[in-house]
Image 1 (tube, rainbow, N blue to C red):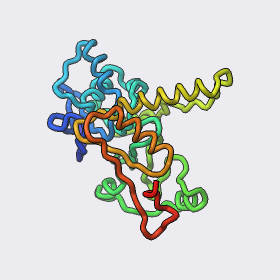
Image 2: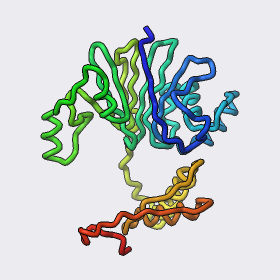
Image 3: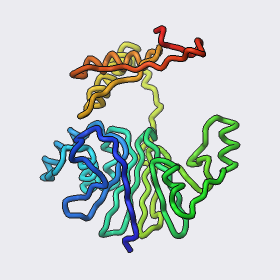
Image 4: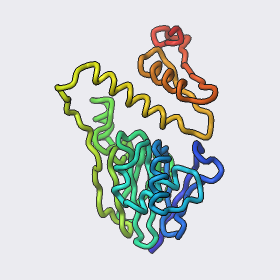
Length: 262
């Protein structure tokens, strides 16, 4: 019945001491493994405290776990962050897996009659007994034609990638539901002018960097010659208390790719 194992190797960013994983709910029913960062975890934590939920840690992992306990699969729509996570429900013998809106954090899986194996890296899956590294020639064709794999394919036969903005529910080892929970809206509002869009973009960038610079460890940024990284670095350094370090990759051999000049 409960033939399940969850493992985790952690890069600690928030609540370094207490945020270790796998993490259990207070009653022991739910267990989470989580890769990523929930940027709006302080706001969500406040919301959960107002609902009477007690916390043992200051980590975003515990916030995510309690969001699932309260809202089940609807919790993903309330998250601002990059994430791939799995939550096991001991009572229902079910597993809930989800990936962030844009698929920043990876989630790979193998599903056959006997097993469901998942990980944030394919090399972890290949360590599982009986799973062999074989080329998926359809994916190889797609990659050679488009420089990208389409849909949920990977280069490996029988190893799938969970699509962005998608969750998966297993019960008793069988996939019960797979659902896309969010779609990007491409509609352009023609009634607004350039100044309004510039103002909104500026506000969104500042808001985004406000919540993305939350960390219990020092943070920095990659800095190239481009507008994106320059803008992000300037805005982030304004918001960040302490020394904000930037890192630039230089190419001595290929002057055309070297942006250290900027």
